[in-house]
Image (tube, rainbow, N blue to C red; front, side, top):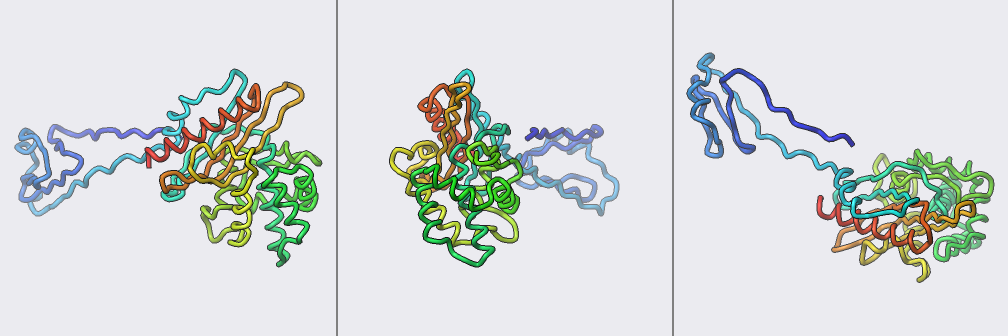
Length: 307
């Protein structure tokens, strides 16, 4: 986001210098300063005397808006990826509604797409006016809590693969996500900003006339994300004392490098944040997890200090 700069007003020598809280009224050809004003005697003595019946108020200047993208970028300077690694972060302070994004590149989703697959399945069930079947619930539970690839493939097929995912994402507001080819759901491409949009849909922090996912569907997804198995409770959880999350990890056979991603909601000091951290080019799974956790912690720290 470009920075905004204020430019001083230019005029003749009859300029009035005021503090940020000053209010000035011109009455009878002379400027009268209210108690909060600071003005130089030089400017008061040279104030114009025409139109004595005219009254003018100079409004106090407003505080400049916070550039949250810049705040996040500053915090990310302390997060150092490996030589071949890249990382992107998106974060939303749920209470204030303020958000920030660092990096706009596209990344392979790996297993974080499983949240998106479940959201698409629930949207289709809503459209049909039905609940998930017992088998679908079994697949959904193992897909999210245990990150079962077999269950993900079954539900990927059930939603219609990439076409079904893309149709659901259009309704959910995702604009930079494309379903993987054929059965390769883990190679779905996405951005951190889009994953934040997905989290807004899941956690009910979106905007518009109404959420695509109804309350029952959102509660269902969140419940599963809050019960991932113990050895998968890393990632954005490093930024909060409580969490609901889904992680993704994928070693690339061509390079030996790792994609490591984490999305979810964390709560720290009574404040909740939606977080999406995507990375690739990591030399190992451990290095990628460390990178993602450092980025998540930096993002929450930056937002908590700026809001």
